[in-house]
Amino acid sequence: EGGISLINEGQLTVCTHLSYQPFQFERDGEIVGFDVDLVDLVAEDLGVQQEIVNTPFETITTGAAFNTDECDLAAAGMTITPERAGVIEFSEGYFDANQAILARADSDVTDEASLAGKTVAAQTGTTGLQYAEENLGDAEVITYEDLPLSLQALQNGEVDSVINDNGVLYDFAKENPDFEVKFDIDTGEEYGIAAKKGNTALIDKVNEVIGAAKEDGRYDEIYQKWFGT
Ligand code: GLN
Image (cartoon, rainbow, N blue to C red; front, side):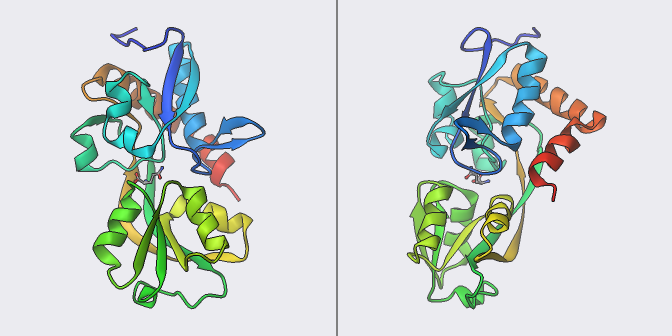
């Protein structure tokens, strides 16, 4: 339909990087989350099933996952950046994000200055790591491959704080009251769904489906499901 061809017939193959709760994570042996529900709408529109493939985050941001035909789309709570947009095709923004700092509830972390001499866990290849490297020079930045490993490092007392997107850190703090989001950092990011550079037919379809879902209430329903109180 409309010049859309899929790498595996009858399915929409979607790369992600697990886990990034509540956007994509495993629950009862199934991969669920905000992004999963949103991309399900695209699959449904195409009359196929979404098939999720877990891959290192940088495989997505560099375009390698598309160039080796590993997946049609990627949905990974991924920020649209000019650098990434040079090598992959992005949809319009579908979710607003900022960076945030998570620490033990009883810690004295209050602002960026209070991180001086402290350790900050950041995730490989992310906008959070980039922010930390550029702006948190008085802290020691330690990188972890994924969000769960950074959160574990904080829980183990290996690090004093974690930098990551606000959505995932607030979600963690909600379930783990010993930890608190101490402050937000206004980076004004927007998440985009991605495809192989030049695959505008598929990205046009993504934009069309998400646009319709925003208008008819399905987007809000999915938002409430994962972010409602
Ligand atoms: N939004 C951040 C980025 O794009 C983190 C995404 C992620 O870790 N899945 O770098």
